[in-house]
Amino acid sequence: MPRVIHFEISANDMEQVKEFYENVFGWEIKKWDGPDEYYLISTGESPEHGINGALFKPKEFFSATVNTIDVPDIDEYIKKVIDNGGTVVTEKIDIPGVGSFAYCKDVEGTMFGILQQDTKPE
Image 1 (cartoon, rainbow, N blue to C red):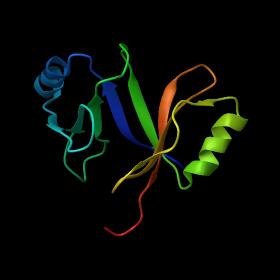
Image 2 (cartoon, helix red, strand yellow):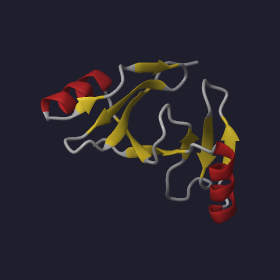
Image 3 (cartoon, rainbow, N blue to C red):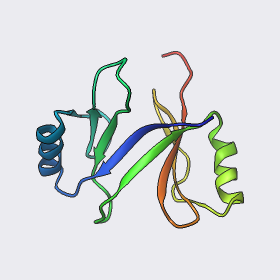
Image 4 (cartoon, rainbow, N blue to C red):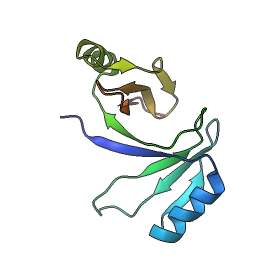
């Protein structure tokens, strides 16, 4: 069964939001080497329960948290989203070393991500 494996928090003022979560929760937040302003969040050490996430700078001003769901076949789940009245917001994006990703919206417009993790050896 697909599960939530990652969250993203939008941050229009990246440094202020980063400092807030570091100070309030003690999360470790570091710049990712990928494109755009994207900071990875570590919320704890394994085997503690929980998931890690990221801060991202949205293309437009908005405030939201986006959950990403792990799926075994992204193309199949893109079709399921559409067939069940949802919308696919972005084309499928291939992220080297991570997998294939797409942003979607449910029937009420709530944004979420789906990710087929890369299983190829590096």
